[in-house]
Length: 266
Image (tube, rainbow, N blue to C red; front, side):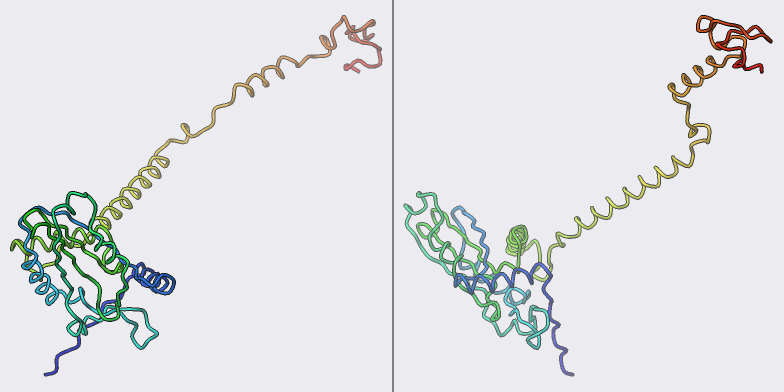
């Protein structure tokens, strides 16, 4: 029975952007869009065993050397997982350096060269390691992980090295990947949305539970004062206008008025 082909793994939207940026860097600067993580290790690091471990891991996890390309030349880019076995395994290059280079405190110049090199992701050149041993490793070693940026982000590269360490110690199998770092972020987002819905429902239920009397407006002090002034300003014809403002009285009711014909009783 023929074996079913391994499905391709599509790049995410961010990975497609980084791949497009890599094309621009290749065109303008003659380099690739690479990232690098450097570790300064103490004595005892076995670079040969590490290279063997990486080769075994690449066999189980083919994405580490899967070529990236566009199906039919027009579709969105994917990791060609089925063609990973045709690509070379990730390289591990080991170099020796004197103790004085370690005492200088800076990173080896080799790492800067690797970071500015040009790689071909279409051939699966996604990850490489460089090891600089000081005094054959007795004084310590510097380990540089250089990768094609769409493969990892910064935190992903750290988690990848921790996973390699767990596989080397036997705490985890090479087929057992660590849980995705996105899961707790998504859970937190769902939790925040749920809490927001609960708060909204509480506000709505609180507004409905208020009695009509509590929602009724109380008259303003200025309105009350205005009503009092209007009530006090009402006068009958016997007291309005004031007597001091007039010089005669009405012939019918004897109320003070300017002219007898202007009285309100008429």
